[in-house]
Length: 509
Image (cartoon, rainbow, N blue to C red; front, side):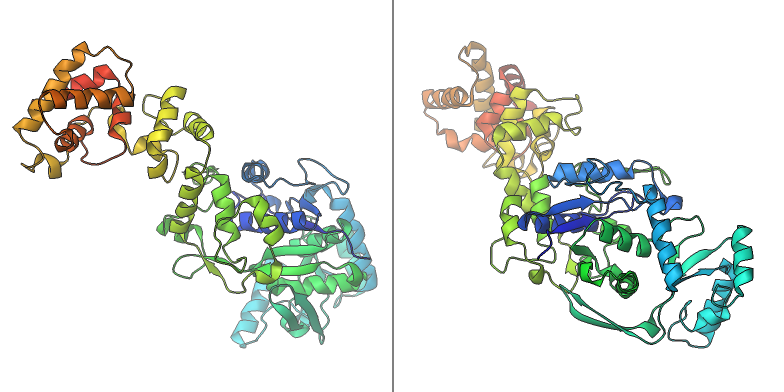
């Protein structure tokens, strides 16, 4: 009988969540939803030296912002709690004892200096596998080379030690990767991985296998960087006798920088690519780093964009909602090769979703944004008008006010392509604008785009002038720019008093 689908996203709280990790979470979520399964988040916090306060909360805030929350996690609980590995120490102690008793693991008392010396000697000898492995362990201080009584004495004395996997010396390890197909690795190329560290906590290699088994995980989606470790994990399943319940593996392609290199923080900065989903304060460097949310990306745009980095539906379609992605997502359509990150494409997605977003919701984004005007806020009325004015000209919500600074401050510079062109900027145009300013004193109608347009045309008709001849001059006198969004709506937003003042100073431009 086929097992119900259960997948897990297992980040380490050692800093802000990388955008590559967000894609891994998304793929897990899509697969779980498609198969009516469960999406777990497990916090792999056994590396206490690198633990960063607030990183776990950051992970959950990211998932909630994107609309892909976990079904089971340390946040919401679940049948297989606890979901923090630091709280499962007793469980690991039980299972490592099983491996020790079966002879598949051993105690190692070597110091860091001794291990470094081993590596240096092997590298000098041009060894193809310069590591602590099935061959070299016979030269080291461990329970395979020391008398049993000495091992016991060292353990009772509390001597620092680790527990290592006893990799078989001559064995071919086979498994099927859902993306990369059949994998064949000879055990002579592997090292004896540390399973339990000196602090008594497990490494990823041990904890993830035990937890995936106990939590009934059926599929493991993780980054390509874990592919070399997979054979050791396969051995652990075999040593425990869990082969029948071993999950299927899918090692995801790397997200690459535009030049084809790995998308490191440095590379991302070089290409203007945010690497974090949300704002992050680095306590070590005291650096404040804006994420996609603070840069103005909409969650639905980021979801659509990330889904297609390394996967496609096999069609020309590019726009997918989260709901549309769920039935379409197929593991076999994930690419093997790394996928380059195209920030311009991400912006294109954001423009699409911004322009299709409900105006009321978009206005709320403007009001709630921390990147509003220097005055410190935008009213609901102004936000609504800005959306109508700028929606089709914006990539990010903040563009709706940042690209129209003249709405908040009278311009001090004016487009020279207009003011320097005698066919566009001449005495007749300036006199007309000045007359508009003077006649506004008697304007008593409601100040709306429609009434303003009617007023300008009425003044022009009374003088037998063609208003189109002066529109660019009016725009420049008002905004400083020769081009832009709907001028009548700009005038409505500015208000009668401000408009009159700007037109009145036309002779000084």
